[in-house]
Structures are given as structure tokens and as C-alpha cells.
Image (cartoon, rainbow, N blue to C red; front, side, top):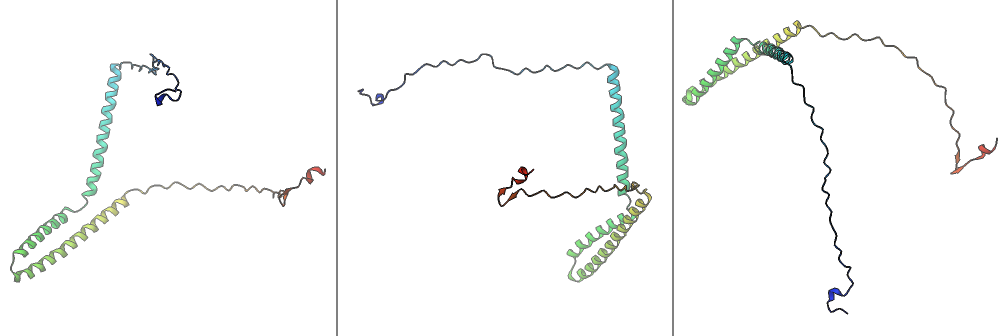
Length: 184
């Protein structure tokens, strides 16, 4: 018996394993990019002209859209707007004066503020009415979109199928009846 407890059991002999590395790794081949033909001067000039026309067209569309938007925004009467802004400024001034005023004058200032608020509400309602009237006038001026004409309905003839007979029942109480196959 061996003295070393590790060698008590038989151990297989160690074999040297050679590792062979492949020198050539499979590299996917990339297709070379096809080079473009150089553009001729005529083609370059043609492309420049197309770009120029496209930019001009785009600018014209943007300007037309901006003009429409401005017209839609500008339908409020400038006099009413200026009057409304002046009332707002006056209201601010009255509120500041109210804080600085003695007790006796505060009640008068409150009355003036309430009158200004009422005037502002009236102006706002007038502006709103004007906007609605102009919007309605604009809708009336715009042509109504044409509705596509409805096609007359063509009735398809109904296909009536004859009634199908019910299939005979082959299974009765869990058993298969083979009688019909043998009685011919």
C-alpha cells in the first residue's frame, strides 16, 4: 500500500493535449461599394435649379400660411384691443392707489375698481362677439365641400340553398353501429 493517502486510489495518467489554433479565421467578405459615376456639369446644374425652385416654392407656401394666420389673428378690432389694454393699466393703477390711500378713500377706490371690471367684461364680450361674427362670415364665404354622390344600391339576388339532411347518428350509447355497412 502506498504511504500517501492521495495515491490510495488509482489515478489516470495525465495525457498532454495539444491545442491547435486555426490560423485562418473565417472573415465574411464584404462587397466593395460600387463607385458612383461623377456627375456631369449639366446634371449638377439641373439639380441646383430643382433645389432653387423647391426652396422658392416652400418659401411662398410658408409666407402664404403666415399671411393667413396673421389675417385670422388680426380680425379683432384694434380700437377695442387698445381700449381694453388701457382699462387694464388703469385698473392696476387704481389697485396701487387703493393700498396707499387712507381708509375713507379705499371704499371709493373699490367702487371705481368694480366699475372698471364691469367695463372690461363688456369689452371682452364685444370682442368675443366680433370674433364669432367674423368667423361665421368667413365660413359663409368659404365654399362648402362637395359631398360625393351616393351610388345607387344594387340588390344582389339571394341564393337559397336547399335544406341539408341531418347526418345519421353513428354512435349510440358509446358503441359504433356498423350494421349499415354490412347490410347492402
